[in-house]
Image (cartoon, rainbow, N blue to C red; front, side, top):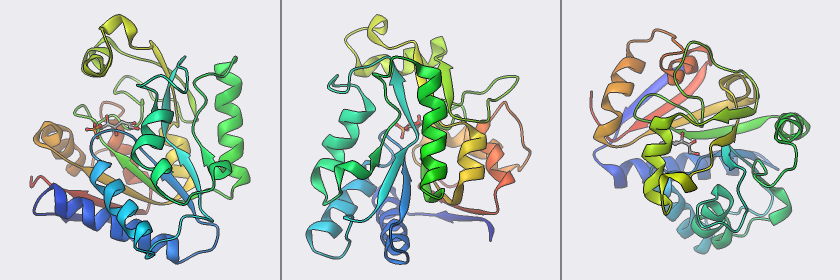
Length: 240
Ligand code: F6R
């Protein structure tokens, strides 16, 4: 218990270990609840899990999933929606029951109500058994960006210019990047997850990860709030 940090040789090794952890956890419990991120980091893990599903090693038919975040407003069929990302890269390739997939709704008419409903849905599912997350170059988790304060529950986040700039590569132009997002808060992540698996991949994360390893909790680096949880596994493909 506490925080276990495991350095991996490379991205492939990290992705394999992550998939093994997820597959092992899913097997350990009926009706498993899995929290998931988007981004480039988890792609290798998703590929391994898809293979494990194809070979019959891992069954997703009874799991329920909750995604960490989604742009707002955004149509599900927008090529940049996290909804589309998840179906293209994972859900569309495994035997999951679509009714058990939960992603904050970028099409909701009332964003605040959607956020409250999302936390209730997580509670109703009995919490998240394993939450997988990535980390941003500035220590962000989901759309919980560094700042003077953090909002604990699932909430509407206003994207910083920095984040919009970083994400514009996926859109036609920076003007196309939605200016808000729906994100689980650090409080929802910590309080509602029984176990958290954080994947740290790429040199751009070195500063944020180094600061994380110092072990001081600061809203200047949202990842450091994970020290308030007592069951964290970190897999990193960069050595600090
Ligand atoms: C993804 C998310 C983000 C990413 C982070 C790292 O749902 O919420 O916080 O985990 O930006 O992104 P990548 O993996 O692309 O480096």
